[in-house]
Image (tube, rainbow, N blue to C red; front, top):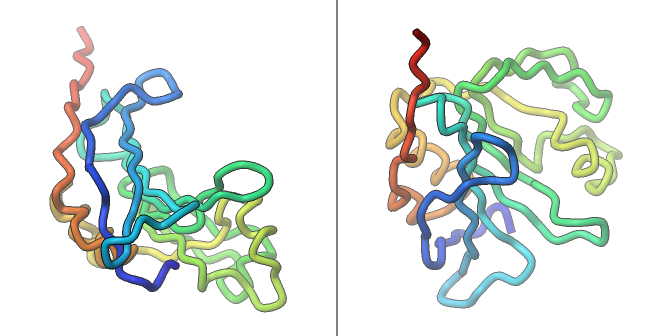
Length: 162
């Protein structure tokens, strides 16, 4: 399902997430007008951190709970591929802006083990998207989501320190 072209169904607005200060959008996906069962899109960010700490990903239903199987992280904490599940990418620093893709886990790794470890392998994005709009365009291409650029910019409210 990762490689197939997808479209977001009913892109909603940013809502308060399950973590304090988080904003998120969750949406269904379709392929050629047919709803994709068990696969969905999410976008998350921090309300008080404009233009950083954004994740855009795809989740799949598993027997355990929904698990992310592909994700683009923009201006997050640095990601170093530490797990042996990373195969040839082990110990490579993917930087603050990177993509986690299903094709990155090492040979002879069961996909469910990769999902349970929260996508341990990533590769850096170059060039780094310069704006939220650029991020949507890049993530749409990487995740094969045609209309991702229709998502509205988050209602960021930076904290003022006095």
